Image (tube, rainbow, N blue to C red; front, side):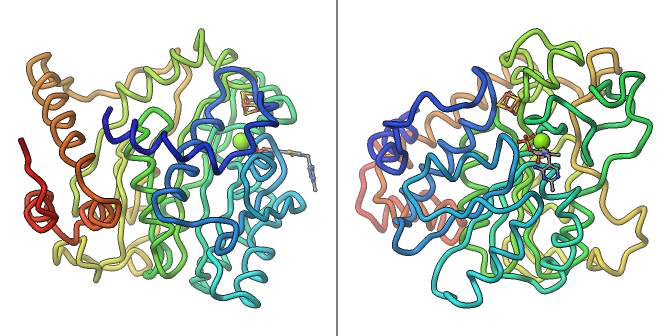
Length: 343
Ligand SMILES: Cc1ncc(C[n+]2csc(CCOP(=O)(O)OP(=O)(O)O)c2C)c(N)n1
Ligand code: SF4
Ligand SMILES: [Mg+2]
């Protein structure tokens, strides 16, 4: 896509390409998250002078070693106290945590709850592969009920943690759900999260093909990505929560992006009705979620619309693109203001 082609010209400067190939398995989703993060940093003009990366332990935690930034490789589960400490002594720095679902929500779960409560001004990118990837595929906090794992061969008997509900227990936090398939959406979500002044959390569904996917019936990483494509749908722009298998960005109730749609803050709603989990990877034996699939004509129309929009976006200067992406200005007004010919 033209927009991607433009970003690709410089984002590689953010990466230590001399260390490639990475240690990640072929087909792993982590590389895609790293690429989208690098593109976003590039687009926002963030570099090693103003942005610090904090990573946890696990396959995801290795990302800090491949980015040309100061990066702290913390103890397992301790990303957030380290991130908050950095932010406390260097408030002018952007602090971005990149961690696995196990690191974030299991061993680091207590820190997560309190960073949210304090509205710590840090961004968390959670690689949610629903498994402890590095250690061989044990059940983690986000593993869906019934999923067969190395440590639960008969199926996980427990209920997965609801990250959306936890993050949105604060009326100030930004929560975004995206997937490794939806790359432009992921980049927009990462950008919004980095720009958010308080606590922000991007919950990125991704594939660990080696230690999860194959065990639950997916033949390849591509098979898992196809599943994400077919299953996850965009939530309405002013959504006040994400239903299972919806991707989107949920802002606090008083934010203009909610279009004045104000409902009871999540913290005051009944705990089990306030926010549903944002979807998870079922094993291939589970019934497919029921969503009316769009017709081929509808798909073609949407594809053409998004290609045309991306082509127009590519003509805009970076600062204008950012304003459009943040919905501060419409694409049409941005084209006019930048004096760009839409033809
Ligand atoms: C204190 C401590 N407990 C346990 C471990 C072992 N350990 C290393 S990585 C990991 C889980 C990683 O899972 P996740 O955070 O989801 O990252 P992924 O590998 O899936 O990216 C565990 C339990 C450790 N390194 N330190
Ligand atoms: S084990 Fe899973 S998460 Fe780790 S690098 Fe391999 S595919 Fe990725
Ligand atoms: Mg994991």
